[in-house]
Length: 214
Image (tube, rainbow, N blue to C red):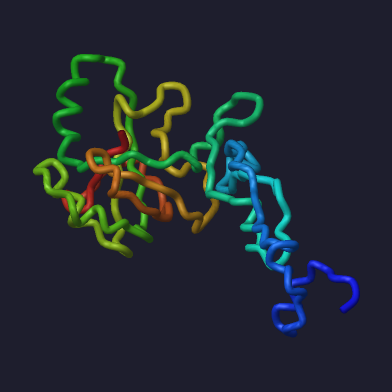
C-alpha cells in the first residue's frame, strides 16, 4: 500500500505492485549506428583511429545496459596533414626473393642511368603463419623465412628512388631496435616485422636469405 515507484529493486525484495510489469515495462538501452572512422590520431606514427555512437534511449526498469560507445582500431598514415610524405622508416618494405635480381639487372643494363645500389641487413622478429601456406611456385621462398634469422635485402634499380637514393621501407632514419614492417610480394598473408642491423654499400648478399626491395 502507498505510492508505487518504477524501481527494479522490488523484483529482488518481492514487494512490487501488482501492475508493476504493465506500469513499469523493461526498456533496454538503444544506441545509434556507428559513426564513420576518424583519421589517425597522429600522422607518421603507429597510433589509432576512433568511431563513436551515442545513446538514443537510456535503459529503464532493469533494461539491458548500454554497450560501449567508442571503438578504437590500429592505424598508420604515411602522409602529414600538410601532404608531405612521412619518414621512410614507417613505410612497410615490399620484398621478393633475390632470385629476381639477375633478371632485373639484365633488363636495366641497357638503361645507362642505373644508380649504384646497396644492401640492408635485418633481423626477422615476427612472421605470420601465411608465409608457410604459400602454394605457388613463385612463393616457395617464403616458407624458408624464420624468426630470429638475419636476412639481406638488396636495393637496386629501378626500386632505388632517384631523388632520395633509397628504397621504400629500407628503415633509413629509424631508431635502433625499432620494429619495422615488411610484406612479401605475391602473398599478402605473408608479412611481419624486423629490426634494421646495418646498411652495406658494398652489396654481397648470400644466396640464402637474400631478398630484393620492390
